[in-house]
Image (cartoon, rainbow, N blue to C red; front, side, top):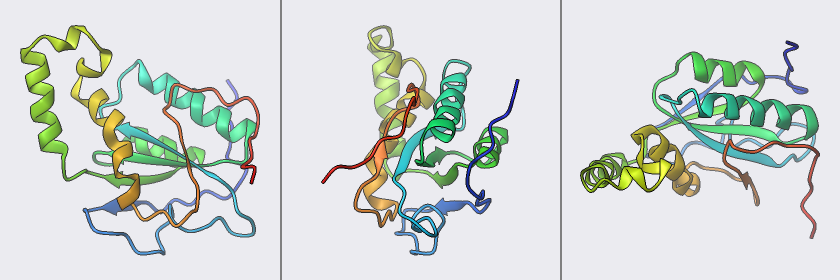
Length: 165
């Protein structure tokens, strides 16, 4: 299988967020040199499973091949082979642990106790629930862009899109 390389230089620096507003010099907040490109932001947990790992790969590779989007991954957890693959492919990775993680875990345990895990796949695994709610912290991660596109990883990009004023 052919590997798709990023059509722009890979910024291998990563940024760890510790609940403080990051400096404007971090790789995910800097505008792309030379032109303004829309950032596609998505969230992944380090415990990403066999269901979501292939979806993440399809989403990232299709975005790189068919769009001019700048992929930015909000990654909950420690750097691992999955975060390294995202970086190698060209995604900017923001390592982030939300301040509300423990409260969400309490809610997850309560949902499990009430057997709500049978009513939604979001209650099935804590990592899936966390990745779903990470988008709430977009406002505290220091993006300086007027607009970003947030999309989950269960997407397939088929063509470029543009903002219309």
